[in-house]
Length: 227
Image (cartoon, rainbow, N blue to C red; front, side, top):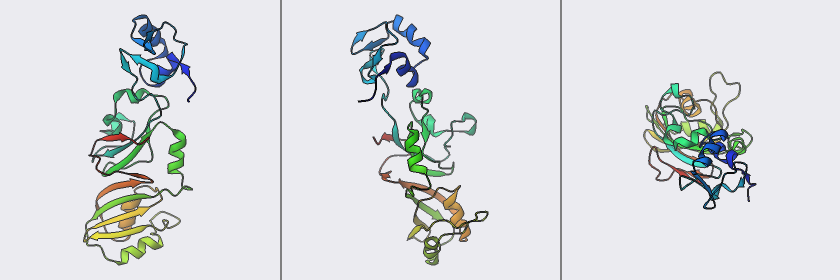
């Protein structure tokens, strides 16, 4: 069982309001603990026992969700960059502490599976180069795929401006212009750059799997819990 925390800290960390505002909410009888009104902002509580305006707290535990990122969305908190993946989540999550963040990133023109969490240790675990977590992408390219590219990926593609070639990756040709690629690195625009280094241009890029997590039939823009 997680350690109990102060009521004002709990509501502040979950993005509901400031700790000072909790006292106002208590005075206005908006908050109940185990069904009972309280005036004590310092009361140690289990978040699952707290209601605000007779509604349970939104996602009181740790967050780990899978989102099907649509085309055109960015994986940044900066609202000046355009449509954000975080705009697809409950608004109250944006005020949480620790902050919700994406596990790695997908660029604006890439769709598919992105994990979002408030657990920094999990982010490190899934993105550390030492962990070699597999990512699976479905790729469509401009020019017809030739069998030689399978061996090029298996040997490790040399990218321009990189001192070492990429780690070996698996490429399966599934149609004339479509391949499924499995790699366990996270270099900047890596899949696009790998195909470019082999003389082809990526038209669409979609991530289907990240480690043990598979997108399945999750619709674009939709998300679901995975813990």
